[in-house]
Length: 164
Image 1 (cartoon, one colour):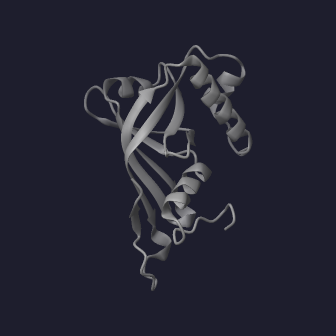
Image 2: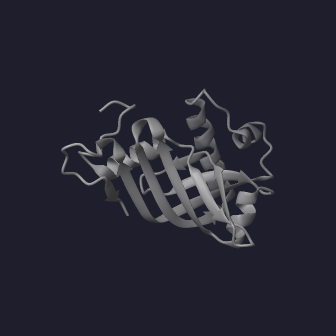
């Protein structure tokens, strides 16, 4: 299997994780203090346990919304591949400074391999402007991997696979 293709056939869990890592700018859905939904794109890092880390600024709507209601949804997608990973979980702020710095360093290193876009918060981190940056960890309670590329084909595998 090459790095540009994720085949759900062999191991859906492994393939979902690879898909999340490759498509690491998912949509994050939060709820504001008035009960209205907000969606934003975040730069993410996913570990082997499917925990997702992302950063944001203290004054951002994301931060305020998560402080109000920590339950979030996230969607990783790539339209050209007709695949998606959708999840629900609880976002928790990383309070440990050393852990927060470690995650930020990993994100900067990972982003350097994606030269086609820049992440403003990571640029702030690189310049040492870290007082306004926080890192969150989402521990998913539900993860679903969908592969629509097989829709309508003679294939007995399900389009949706519950990962967690």
